[in-house]
Amino acid sequence: MTTAASTSLTTTLAALADRRLVVLTGAGVSTDSGIPDYRGPGAPDRRPMTFQEFVSSPAAQQRYWARSHLGYQRIGHATPNAGHRALAATPAIDLLITQNVDGLHEASGQQPMVALHGRVSDVVCLDCRASSPRARLQDRLTAANPDFLTIHAAAPARPDGDVELAATASFVVPGCEACGGRLKPDVVFFGENVPRGRVQRCLEAVDALATNGGALLVVGSSLTVMSGLRFVKRAAAAGVDVVIVNRGATRGDAAATLRLGAGCSEFLTLLAAHRRAPARV
Image 1 (cartoon, rainbow, N blue to C red):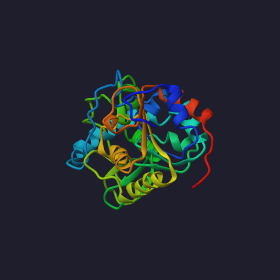
Image 2: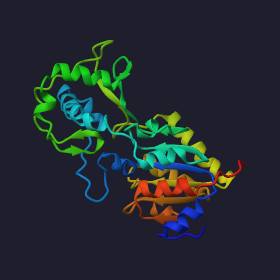
Image 3: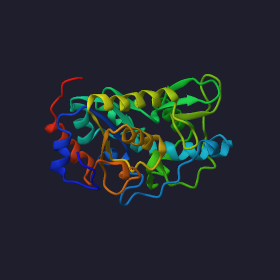
Image 4: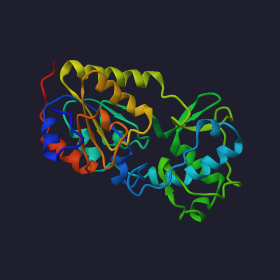
């Protein structure tokens, strides 16, 4: 494969037809499920709460959970789209790495995979580390704040599973059922590190591509944050082909062997149809 800034759909599909793959997905894969993109065309302004801000005060936690309670009513009911389903059916994917926290790859039956930033469907206590389902917390939040969902149903959606909302001062946030401590979605906030074990598993899969002739395929990510970009840099440094499919420029374009501007669901559906399972090395 020759280095190129952009290429055709036909060339990209042919290049990936019979090679082992590690796939890295971003928010663009979930837009067809109704979840707003972070940085694509028309994306809403993104001002995520950092971990430092979240732990700084009860008021910050109150503000976060009020917005997230509303947002989860939407993201929590999203279902896998054609792109998720196509990836789950695509042969010879050594590892699916997703930066998304929506759980839609898991719901489509994707295996093996790493949810790099965790899952919004899980909740963890910052004080005793007890884990619990988000659905359970949603029920508790609804009981503690009757009519809140109805009153603020029209609040505009933002990425990260929350909404635009200023009126949060009266929102009641229950504590951990085990210890009464501070609850946080079990996802990696800005200012937190991705757990080392997750990163290591992904790096090992990327490194293996150098010996089995595989490629790293990036779909629906602008690669703005280093947690995803590190895998592109690692692959490129090892001489592994990097194929990026995304509408709009990405931070990893300079390292790409092939670069295709295309919709995620359409591309992944065609990829699944064109793939042939290569022999294992």
